[in-house]
Length: 408
Image (cartoon, rainbow, N blue to C red; front, side):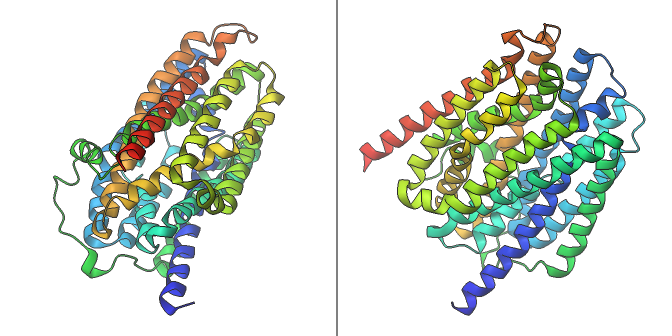
């Protein structure tokens, strides 16, 4: 192994640990955030609306700030921006425990969204230190760190949440601040001085950046596929705990176990199998098969009326965890080294837009059906919506790859 590749391996390891600790903190609060909202809004429909508004406020600020952070990382380097994001996340977790009303929860969570571009910067970091041929596999490692974070975070958060709903927030704050301390001393810079580019507010404009994604070489239509797929994922994520608590009477611990299983499947695919899958199938076919798998499983999530069946369905979607890193790799190959941060920030903004829409629509839809009896099929409406969005992503991706094949 050359010294350069060895150095890149070390750099990758540093940033992956940083991402893991970051996601661990986020995962800790997922099983208990609805209960924190419920302390101020005890009625199910009111809780769903406020929960949606609080999650959406985070995503709105992320939408506006992620491209800014990505552009700043292209100018000043990945390291300082990544550390700033991690510090902001830790402070936000702590402030959540000090909120005394729903309005304050909304404001504090919105402030957290301002520094929520860390994953986009981490993706750019990985792109900096990876060759184009191995970029899909390398970006899959970021997904694997997501999985590891969700293996440990929700399970631990569920256990702590059984004791007191604030305990996971305190631990998440401590983990993030320890992560900041670790990165301050151990995280090296990945972006060489010659690959940096001048900062401009036009490149940090989320609207123009999203428009610019559609003009990237041979990948424009995939923006729509990525958008619908992210909408599906966020619809599922933001209504999962609300849905399982109402439909099956699940506790924070049971939700923690389900998210633990999601993390296991993500790690197996993105951390162990993704490189081999992409080598065998190619990025395009991997994306199509993953989207098809997710569409089917999301539909089944809405249909089943027994909680244990949700546990059965989670591992059935293991191929679904390959779709996003495969599409990200296609986007990453379409730009040069100087624009990785901006592009990953734009993809993060796309995720934020979809998160806002999915959160507001999904939780509002759930609030409309939340009064129905437990056995009603309509209680699965948010999952049906997610399945429809994922199905649209699948059709767009198939059409895009077919057109691309004809053009060759």
